[in-house]
Length: 397
Image (cartoon, rainbow, N blue to C red; front, side, top):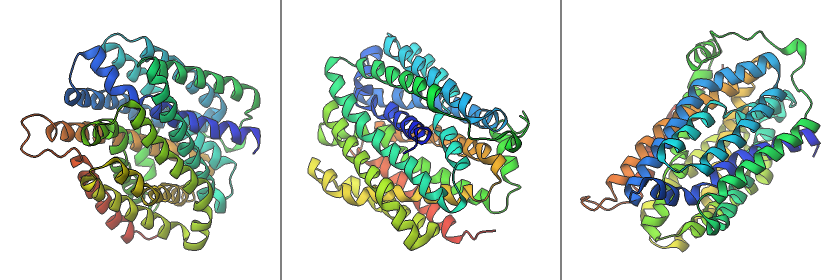
Protein backbone atom coordinates (compact mmCIF):
# COMPACT_ATOMS: atom_id res chain seq x y z
CA UNK A 1 0.00 0.00 0.00
CA UNK A 2 1.43 3.38 -1.02
CA UNK A 3 2.09 5.82 1.84
CA UNK A 4 -0.59 8.37 0.81
CA UNK A 5 -3.20 5.61 0.56
CA UNK A 6 -1.96 4.25 3.88
CA UNK A 7 -2.45 7.71 5.41
CA UNK A 8 -6.01 7.91 4.03
CA UNK A 9 -6.68 4.40 5.33
CA UNK A 10 -5.36 5.31 8.80
CA UNK A 11 -7.33 8.57 8.78
CA UNK A 12 -10.60 6.71 8.25
CA UNK A 13 -9.53 4.11 10.83
CA UNK A 14 -9.00 6.90 13.35
CA UNK A 15 -12.26 8.53 12.34
CA UNK A 16 -14.18 5.36 13.18
CA UNK A 17 -11.94 4.65 16.19
CA UNK A 18 -12.84 8.06 17.53
CA UNK A 19 -16.46 6.96 17.55
CA UNK A 20 -15.87 3.45 18.84
CA UNK A 21 -13.22 4.26 21.44
CA UNK A 22 -15.58 6.51 23.42
CA UNK A 23 -18.83 4.56 23.00
CA UNK A 24 -18.15 2.05 25.82
CA UNK A 25 -17.59 4.85 28.36
CA UNK A 26 -20.23 7.39 27.30
CA UNK A 27 -22.92 6.02 29.65
CA UNK A 28 -20.48 6.19 32.59
CA UNK A 29 -19.11 9.63 31.64
CA UNK A 30 -22.53 11.24 31.23
CA UNK A 31 -23.82 9.72 34.47
CA UNK A 32 -20.63 10.94 36.17
CA UNK A 33 -20.73 14.59 35.04
CA UNK A 34 -24.51 14.90 34.88
CA UNK A 35 -25.53 12.82 37.92
CA UNK A 36 -28.33 11.12 35.96
CA UNK A 37 -29.54 7.53 35.59
CA UNK A 38 -29.03 5.29 32.54
CA UNK A 39 -32.34 6.20 30.89
CA UNK A 40 -31.64 9.94 31.21
CA UNK A 41 -28.00 9.45 30.16
CA UNK A 42 -29.21 7.97 26.86
CA UNK A 43 -31.15 11.18 26.13
CA UNK A 44 -28.15 13.38 26.99
CA UNK A 45 -25.94 11.20 24.78
CA UNK A 46 -28.36 11.69 21.90
CA UNK A 47 -28.44 15.46 22.50
CA UNK A 48 -24.63 15.66 22.47
CA UNK A 49 -24.60 13.77 19.19
CA UNK A 50 -27.20 16.13 17.73
CA UNK A 51 -25.07 19.20 18.65
CA UNK A 52 -22.11 17.61 16.86
CA UNK A 53 -24.19 16.63 13.85
CA UNK A 54 -25.90 20.01 13.36
CA UNK A 55 -22.54 21.71 12.86
CA UNK A 56 -21.32 18.84 10.71
CA UNK A 57 -24.44 19.23 8.55
CA UNK A 58 -23.97 22.99 8.20
CA UNK A 59 -20.21 23.04 7.59
CA UNK A 60 -19.42 19.82 5.69
CA UNK A 61 -20.24 21.32 2.26
CA UNK A 62 -18.05 24.31 3.17
CA UNK A 63 -15.15 21.99 3.94
CA UNK A 64 -15.83 19.96 0.79
CA UNK A 65 -15.91 23.15 -1.28
CA UNK A 66 -12.65 24.30 0.30
CA UNK A 67 -11.02 21.00 -0.64
CA UNK A 68 -12.22 21.43 -4.25
CA UNK A 69 -10.74 24.93 -4.31
CA UNK A 70 -7.54 24.61 -2.26
CA UNK A 71 -6.81 20.88 -2.25
CA UNK A 72 -7.39 17.87 -0.05
CA UNK A 73 -4.10 17.94 1.87
CA UNK A 74 -4.55 21.13 3.95
CA UNK A 75 -8.15 20.26 4.80
CA UNK A 76 -7.22 16.78 6.02
CA UNK A 77 -4.29 17.96 8.14
CA UNK A 78 -6.15 20.85 9.77
CA UNK A 79 -9.17 18.62 10.49
CA UNK A 80 -6.96 16.05 12.22
CA UNK A 81 -5.30 18.73 14.35
CA UNK A 82 -8.63 20.14 15.53
CA UNK A 83 -9.96 16.61 16.09
CA UNK A 84 -7.12 15.95 18.53
CA UNK A 85 -7.85 19.21 20.38
CA UNK A 86 -11.55 18.33 20.52
CA UNK A 87 -10.84 15.04 22.27
CA UNK A 88 -8.69 16.86 24.82
CA UNK A 89 -11.59 19.19 25.61
CA UNK A 90 -13.80 16.14 26.15
CA UNK A 91 -11.13 14.46 28.30
CA UNK A 92 -10.88 17.41 30.69
CA UNK A 93 -14.60 18.14 30.88
CA UNK A 94 -16.15 18.24 34.33
CA UNK A 95 -19.64 19.28 33.31
CA UNK A 96 -22.20 18.61 30.61
CA UNK A 97 -21.81 22.12 29.13
CA UNK A 98 -18.10 21.49 28.47
CA UNK A 99 -18.99 18.24 26.73
CA UNK A 100 -21.32 20.33 24.57
CA UNK A 101 -18.47 22.74 23.74
CA UNK A 102 -16.31 19.82 22.64
CA UNK A 103 -19.02 18.38 20.43
CA UNK A 104 -19.82 21.83 19.00
CA UNK A 105 -16.22 22.43 17.91
CA UNK A 106 -15.75 18.86 16.70
CA UNK A 107 -18.82 19.06 14.47
CA UNK A 108 -17.46 22.09 12.59
CA UNK A 109 -14.25 20.35 11.59
CA UNK A 110 -15.47 16.74 11.23
CA UNK A 111 -14.26 16.61 7.65
CA UNK A 112 -11.73 13.79 7.63
CA UNK A 113 -14.04 11.08 6.30
CA UNK A 114 -15.62 13.10 3.49
CA UNK A 115 -12.32 14.64 2.39
CA UNK A 116 -10.65 11.23 2.53
CA UNK A 117 -13.40 9.99 0.23
CA UNK A 118 -12.73 12.87 -2.19
CA UNK A 119 -9.00 12.05 -2.12
CA UNK A 120 -9.73 8.42 -2.93
CA UNK A 121 -12.02 9.50 -5.78
CA UNK A 122 -9.22 11.71 -7.17
CA UNK A 123 -6.79 8.80 -7.44
CA UNK A 124 -9.26 6.13 -8.64
CA UNK A 125 -10.47 5.22 -12.11
CA UNK A 126 -14.22 5.05 -12.74
CA UNK A 127 -14.34 1.26 -12.60
CA UNK A 128 -12.34 1.11 -9.36
CA UNK A 129 -14.20 3.73 -7.33
CA UNK A 130 -16.71 1.41 -5.67
CA UNK A 131 -13.94 -1.06 -4.81
CA UNK A 132 -11.73 1.68 -3.36
CA UNK A 133 -14.64 3.07 -1.37
CA UNK A 134 -14.88 -0.49 -0.09
CA UNK A 135 -11.28 -0.09 1.11
CA UNK A 136 -12.40 2.96 3.07
CA UNK A 137 -15.25 0.85 4.42
CA UNK A 138 -12.70 -1.75 5.49
CA UNK A 139 -10.77 1.01 7.25
CA UNK A 140 -13.97 1.98 9.03
CA UNK A 141 -14.31 -1.67 10.06
CA UNK A 142 -10.73 -1.78 11.36
CA UNK A 143 -11.47 1.29 13.44
CA UNK A 144 -14.60 -0.32 14.81
CA UNK A 145 -12.52 -3.33 15.83
CA UNK A 146 -9.71 -1.38 17.47
CA UNK A 147 -11.75 1.50 18.86
CA UNK A 148 -14.25 -0.33 21.08
CA UNK A 149 -11.63 -2.89 22.08
CA UNK A 150 -9.22 -0.15 23.15
CA UNK A 151 -12.00 1.91 24.70
CA UNK A 152 -13.22 -1.06 26.73
CA UNK A 153 -9.70 -1.81 27.98
CA UNK A 154 -8.89 1.82 28.78
CA UNK A 155 -12.17 2.15 30.67
CA UNK A 156 -10.48 0.33 33.53
CA UNK A 157 -8.32 3.46 33.98
CA UNK A 158 -11.31 5.80 34.10
CA UNK A 159 -13.90 7.28 31.76
CA UNK A 160 -11.41 9.93 30.51
CA UNK A 161 -8.63 7.62 29.35
CA UNK A 162 -10.13 6.77 25.92
CA UNK A 163 -10.37 10.49 25.05
CA UNK A 164 -6.66 11.05 25.75
CA UNK A 165 -5.84 8.04 23.58
CA UNK A 166 -8.02 9.31 20.71
CA UNK A 167 -6.38 12.75 20.89
CA UNK A 168 -2.88 11.25 20.74
CA UNK A 169 -3.74 9.03 17.78
CA UNK A 170 -5.29 11.87 15.76
CA UNK A 171 -2.29 14.14 16.38
CA UNK A 172 0.19 11.40 15.46
CA UNK A 173 -1.61 10.72 12.19
CA UNK A 174 -1.62 14.44 11.39
CA UNK A 175 2.18 14.44 11.71
CA UNK A 176 2.41 11.32 9.52
CA UNK A 177 0.27 12.96 6.83
CA UNK A 178 2.35 16.14 6.93
CA UNK A 179 5.38 14.17 5.73
CA UNK A 180 3.85 11.61 3.32
CA UNK A 181 0.65 13.08 1.81
CA UNK A 182 0.95 14.79 -1.60
CA UNK A 183 -1.91 16.84 -3.02
CA UNK A 184 -4.26 14.74 -5.18
CA UNK A 185 -6.26 17.53 -6.84
CA UNK A 186 -4.33 19.17 -9.67
CA UNK A 187 -4.54 22.91 -10.20
CA UNK A 188 -6.43 22.58 -13.49
CA UNK A 189 -9.09 20.43 -11.79
CA UNK A 190 -9.85 22.94 -9.04
CA UNK A 191 -12.80 25.30 -9.02
CA UNK A 192 -13.21 28.67 -7.38
CA UNK A 193 -14.70 28.55 -3.91
CA UNK A 194 -18.33 29.69 -4.01
CA UNK A 195 -20.18 30.53 -0.79
CA UNK A 196 -23.44 30.06 -2.66
CA UNK A 197 -22.60 26.38 -3.10
CA UNK A 198 -20.57 25.94 0.10
CA UNK A 199 -23.55 25.25 2.35
CA UNK A 200 -25.90 22.27 2.53
CA UNK A 201 -28.72 24.07 0.75
CA UNK A 202 -26.54 25.42 -2.07
CA UNK A 203 -24.83 22.04 -2.42
CA UNK A 204 -28.10 20.14 -2.75
CA UNK A 205 -29.36 22.73 -5.24
CA UNK A 206 -26.25 22.01 -7.32
CA UNK A 207 -26.71 18.24 -6.91
CA UNK A 208 -30.26 18.59 -8.30
CA UNK A 209 -28.76 19.61 -11.65
CA UNK A 210 -27.16 16.16 -11.99
CA UNK A 211 -29.69 13.66 -13.44
CA UNK A 212 -30.75 10.84 -11.15
CA UNK A 213 -28.55 11.84 -8.21
CA UNK A 214 -31.14 13.23 -5.76
CA UNK A 215 -33.04 9.91 -5.33
CA UNK A 216 -29.70 8.25 -4.57
CA UNK A 217 -28.90 10.87 -1.95
CA UNK A 218 -32.30 10.29 -0.34
CA UNK A 219 -31.62 6.54 -0.20
CA UNK A 220 -28.22 7.30 1.34
CA UNK A 221 -29.92 9.49 3.98
CA UNK A 222 -32.48 6.81 4.89
CA UNK A 223 -29.81 4.14 5.24
CA UNK A 224 -27.69 6.47 7.36
CA UNK A 225 -30.63 7.19 9.67
CA UNK A 226 -31.13 3.44 10.07
CA UNK A 227 -27.44 2.68 10.63
CA UNK A 228 -26.93 5.36 13.27
CA UNK A 229 -29.15 3.42 15.63
CA UNK A 230 -25.91 1.56 16.52
CA UNK A 231 -23.81 4.47 17.84
CA UNK A 232 -26.96 6.05 19.27
CA UNK A 233 -28.15 3.28 21.57
CA UNK A 234 -25.93 0.18 21.29
CA UNK A 235 -24.07 0.76 24.57
CA UNK A 236 -27.38 1.48 26.33
CA UNK A 237 -29.20 -1.39 24.60
CA UNK A 238 -26.47 -3.84 25.66
CA UNK A 239 -26.75 -2.80 29.29
CA UNK A 240 -30.55 -2.86 29.35
CA UNK A 241 -31.05 -6.06 27.33
CA UNK A 242 -28.06 -8.17 28.42
CA UNK A 243 -26.62 -6.31 31.46
CA UNK A 244 -23.30 -5.72 29.64
CA UNK A 245 -20.49 -3.69 31.18
CA UNK A 246 -18.17 -1.33 29.20
CA UNK A 247 -15.79 -4.20 28.34
CA UNK A 248 -18.60 -6.29 26.84
CA UNK A 249 -19.95 -3.33 24.88
CA UNK A 250 -16.46 -2.80 23.47
CA UNK A 251 -16.04 -6.50 22.64
CA UNK A 252 -19.36 -6.67 20.78
CA UNK A 253 -18.56 -3.56 18.75
CA UNK A 254 -15.07 -4.87 18.01
CA UNK A 255 -16.50 -8.16 16.75
CA UNK A 256 -18.97 -6.30 14.53
CA UNK A 257 -16.20 -4.06 13.21
CA UNK A 258 -14.01 -7.09 12.46
CA UNK A 259 -16.83 -8.52 10.36
CA UNK A 260 -17.21 -5.25 8.45
CA UNK A 261 -13.45 -5.19 7.87
CA UNK A 262 -13.54 -8.66 6.32
CA UNK A 263 -16.57 -7.87 4.15
CA UNK A 264 -15.37 -4.52 2.83
CA UNK A 265 -11.69 -5.37 2.70
CA UNK A 266 -11.82 -8.80 1.09
CA UNK A 267 -15.29 -9.84 -0.07
CA UNK A 268 -16.84 -6.70 -1.56
CA UNK A 269 -14.63 -6.76 -4.66
CA UNK A 270 -15.74 -10.23 -5.84
CA UNK A 271 -19.34 -9.41 -4.84
CA UNK A 272 -19.30 -6.22 -6.94
CA UNK A 273 -17.62 -8.00 -9.84
CA UNK A 274 -20.18 -10.79 -9.79
CA UNK A 275 -23.39 -8.85 -9.14
CA UNK A 276 -22.72 -5.20 -9.96
CA UNK A 277 -23.31 -2.14 -7.82
CA UNK A 278 -27.13 -1.98 -7.85
CA UNK A 279 -27.75 -5.63 -6.92
CA UNK A 280 -25.03 -5.41 -4.26
CA UNK A 281 -26.70 -2.36 -2.71
CA UNK A 282 -30.10 -4.09 -2.66
CA UNK A 283 -28.58 -7.17 -1.05
CA UNK A 284 -26.98 -5.05 1.69
CA UNK A 285 -30.31 -3.37 2.41
CA UNK A 286 -32.02 -6.76 2.79
CA UNK A 287 -29.43 -7.82 5.37
CA UNK A 288 -29.91 -4.51 7.20
CA UNK A 289 -33.63 -5.16 7.40
CA UNK A 290 -33.19 -8.74 8.60
CA UNK A 291 -30.77 -7.59 11.31
CA UNK A 292 -33.01 -4.84 12.69
CA UNK A 293 -36.00 -7.16 12.85
CA UNK A 294 -33.96 -9.81 14.69
CA UNK A 295 -32.70 -7.68 17.63
CA UNK A 296 -36.00 -7.57 19.56
CA UNK A 297 -35.97 -11.37 19.72
CA UNK A 298 -32.42 -11.65 21.10
CA UNK A 299 -32.46 -12.43 24.81
CA UNK A 300 -28.97 -13.82 25.38
CA UNK A 301 -25.52 -12.47 24.56
CA UNK A 302 -24.69 -15.46 22.37
CA UNK A 303 -27.65 -14.59 20.12
CA UNK A 304 -25.91 -11.35 19.10
CA UNK A 305 -22.63 -13.07 18.26
CA UNK A 306 -24.29 -16.00 16.50
CA UNK A 307 -26.19 -13.67 14.15
CA UNK A 308 -23.25 -11.33 13.55
CA UNK A 309 -21.76 -13.29 10.57
CA UNK A 310 -25.01 -12.55 8.74
CA UNK A 311 -25.58 -8.95 9.86
CA UNK A 312 -22.12 -7.73 8.76
CA UNK A 313 -23.01 -8.34 5.10
CA UNK A 314 -25.15 -5.20 5.33
CA UNK A 315 -21.83 -3.33 4.98
CA UNK A 316 -21.79 -3.84 1.19
CA UNK A 317 -24.67 -1.39 0.60
CA UNK A 318 -23.01 1.98 1.18
CA UNK A 319 -19.80 1.46 -0.90
CA UNK A 320 -21.97 0.34 -3.82
CA UNK A 321 -24.07 3.50 -3.46
CA UNK A 322 -20.96 5.67 -3.18
CA UNK A 323 -19.53 4.18 -6.35
CA UNK A 324 -22.74 4.83 -8.27
CA UNK A 325 -22.93 8.44 -7.10
CA UNK A 326 -19.23 9.23 -7.57
CA UNK A 327 -19.40 8.10 -11.19
CA UNK A 328 -22.31 10.52 -11.70
CA UNK A 329 -20.39 13.73 -10.97
CA UNK A 330 -17.40 15.44 -12.67
CA UNK A 331 -13.89 15.33 -11.21
CA UNK A 332 -13.95 18.91 -9.92
CA UNK A 333 -17.12 18.23 -7.91
CA UNK A 334 -16.01 15.10 -6.04
CA UNK A 335 -15.34 17.12 -2.90
CA UNK A 336 -18.73 18.77 -3.22
CA UNK A 337 -20.41 15.35 -3.56
CA UNK A 338 -18.52 14.01 -0.55
CA UNK A 339 -19.52 17.17 1.34
CA UNK A 340 -23.15 16.56 0.41
CA UNK A 341 -22.95 12.95 1.62
CA UNK A 342 -21.20 14.12 4.78
CA UNK A 343 -24.00 16.64 5.36
CA UNK A 344 -26.58 13.90 4.87
CA UNK A 345 -24.66 11.71 7.30
CA UNK A 346 -24.72 14.60 9.75
CA UNK A 347 -28.44 15.11 9.15
CA UNK A 348 -28.96 11.42 9.90
CA UNK A 349 -26.87 11.90 13.03
CA UNK A 350 -29.23 14.68 14.06
CA UNK A 351 -32.39 12.72 13.39
CA UNK A 352 -31.36 9.23 14.50
CA UNK A 353 -29.89 9.89 17.97
CA UNK A 354 -32.60 12.42 18.79
CA UNK A 355 -35.36 9.95 17.93
CA UNK A 356 -33.70 6.64 18.86
CA UNK A 357 -32.52 7.67 22.33
CA UNK A 358 -35.96 9.00 23.20
CA UNK A 359 -37.64 5.84 21.96
CA UNK A 360 -35.14 3.82 23.99
CA UNK A 361 -35.77 5.96 27.06
CA UNK A 362 -39.55 5.60 26.75
CA UNK A 363 -39.43 1.82 26.42
CA UNK A 364 -36.95 1.35 29.30
CA UNK A 365 -38.19 3.79 31.95
CA UNK A 366 -39.82 2.43 35.08
CA UNK A 367 -43.41 3.29 34.17
CA UNK A 368 -43.27 2.14 30.54
CA UNK A 369 -46.26 0.02 29.44
CA UNK A 370 -43.94 -2.21 27.37
CA UNK A 371 -40.31 -2.88 28.24
CA UNK A 372 -38.59 -3.12 24.85
CA UNK A 373 -34.97 -1.88 24.69
CA UNK A 374 -34.79 -2.97 21.03
CA UNK A 375 -37.67 -0.70 19.94
CA UNK A 376 -35.33 1.74 18.09
CA UNK A 377 -34.22 -1.08 15.79
CA UNK A 378 -37.80 -1.46 14.57
CA UNK A 379 -37.79 2.20 13.47
CA UNK A 380 -34.53 1.55 11.63
CA UNK A 381 -36.18 -1.38 9.85
CA UNK A 382 -38.92 0.96 8.61
CA UNK A 383 -36.31 3.41 7.27
CA UNK A 384 -34.59 0.60 5.36
CA UNK A 385 -37.88 -0.54 3.83
CA UNK A 386 -38.51 2.94 2.40
CA UNK A 387 -34.91 3.14 1.10
CA UNK A 388 -35.25 -0.27 -0.56
CA UNK A 389 -38.45 0.72 -2.36
CA UNK A 390 -36.96 4.00 -3.63
CA UNK A 391 -33.72 2.42 -4.77
CA UNK A 392 -35.36 -0.55 -6.47
CA UNK A 393 -37.29 1.92 -8.65
CA UNK A 394 -34.24 4.05 -9.49
CA UNK A 395 -32.83 3.93 -13.01
CA UNK A 396 -29.51 5.48 -14.12
CA UNK A 397 -29.83 8.68 -16.13
